Length: 207
Length: 207
DNA sequence: TTAGAATTGTTAAAAATTTAACAGATAAGT
DNA sequence: ACTTATCTGTTAAATTTTTAACAATTCTAA
Ligand SMILES: NC(=O)c1ccc[n+]([C@@H]2O[C@H](COP(=O)([O-])OP(=O)(O)OC[C@H]3O[C@@H](n4cnc5c(N)ncnc54)[C@H](O)[C@@H]3O)[C@@H](O)[C@H]2O)c1
Ligand SMILES: NC(=O)c1ccc[n+]([C@@H]2O[C@H](COP(=O)([O-])OP(=O)(O)OC[C@H]3O[C@@H](n4cnc5c(N)ncnc54)[C@H](O)[C@@H]3O)[C@@H](O)[C@H]2O)c1
Image 1 (tube, each protein chain N blue to C red):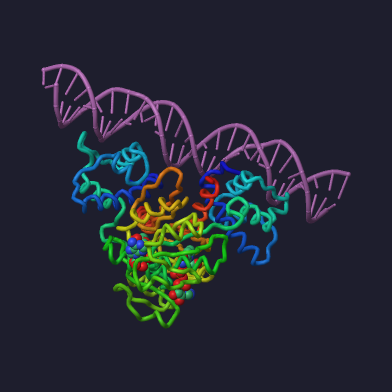
Image 2: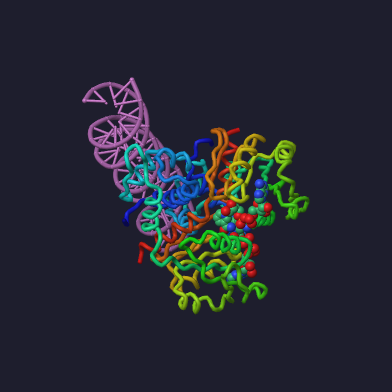
């Protein structure tokens, strides 16, 4: 199940969340066009994605939601759940930890780091905050594979480098500073402001 | 300058931010491959994007940074700057307002809304927080064109509908709840968890 | 002043992604 | 049982996006 297109992986995550909602609402089966409507894409795309992961629906009945959620989980999650660190316990860092805590997903934040004494040695939603100096030590001890950078932009490159040295395998960067990592580390840059500027652009051009 | 590919628009926003950084660092000109390195894309792509917006560099000297920033601004910004509302003054809502405030960009948050009495009638980074009931009134009075939804997911569809009724033209949705809007409204769904799950997927498959 | 290196701008090719088209299967109604 | 509506799964086509290729231009320096 390795060669899924990037975009498909992204959509699978979204399918799963929507499907869980439907499950909670009491539905057991769903049609491709229903999923499509929920996510504003076409039903063809949904069917194609589902085909790619090797799932089959029942004709005239649709897809079994529970099974799909389970299958997507198999593809996206790891058995034991992934262990994550958040670096920079400001607004966004804290928001993230609280959010994941409530969701109880397979993605577990198991440590956080900061340099501000007010934040260090405190616990946020069960996540302990260490001084940045202990980054490498804790990451290795706790077998953390993913780092989320929510520090001020200026220090992001340095933090990034330290994460890589410590052996992290994936980084999600929330700062607007573009980072560099070796090939074997997966880097996702998540830029909230670009999204907003994109909206602004399209609003401007639809006037 | 209407028919820019979606992806190009996105990159232009990123170019601008990086270029501003370079400007601040004292550079006046930059080569396509330098921009490319900053953003982890190819120099061809940079040149192509720049071509599409009708800018020209100087051979062997590169692109004039100041001019490029100005041109990108012309394409992306509106003259007067866009007026924005944030609905839901929790962690993310506040983070956003503070961030935009510091940046002093053309994107101005001019109002925010909540239902929690603790938040209402207070000011965050110069942005006043109104009760949700006044949404339509304020949006129309203040000529707000863009809404950022950072409420709890459950109420997002309702908020969205109210925004549309009030005449908003673009929505940036931070909740994991997919929304529906009429064709003339531009909707961007920004899902932080999907990004994280994507990282997790690729980490898993690189092991 | 000429050769060589560097860099842009553009067209063409390739790759990735989305959409269309439609055959085949099944449930529901008659 | 037969017909019809509806959906899935899949292959093929279309579109979008990225990458390659290279001519043209400018600077450097022998
Ligand atoms: N925190 C994260 O990392 C994260 C990640 C992904 C998605 N999200 C989503 O982003 C959204 C905001 O997250 P947050 O951490 O800022 O949440 P939060 O709980 O801190 O803030 C929500 C705010 O919305 C207000 N609110 C409630 N009902 C409202 C209504 N009807 N109208 C206007 N305001 C209302 C609340 O009073 C509160 O101030 C949520 O939907 C959350 O699921 C958060
Ligand atoms: N807030 C937004 O809406 C928004 C939007 C786009 C991008 N961003 C970016 O996201 C990042 C975080 O934003 P925020 O609003 O949470 O910022 P914040 O200032 O609230 O939090 C930053 C945290 O990082 C800590 N920190 C500082 N230096 C550190 C270091 N060397 N190592 C570890 N921690 C360190 C600080 O003590 C603080 O707790 C920033 O880079 C910001 O530019 C924010």
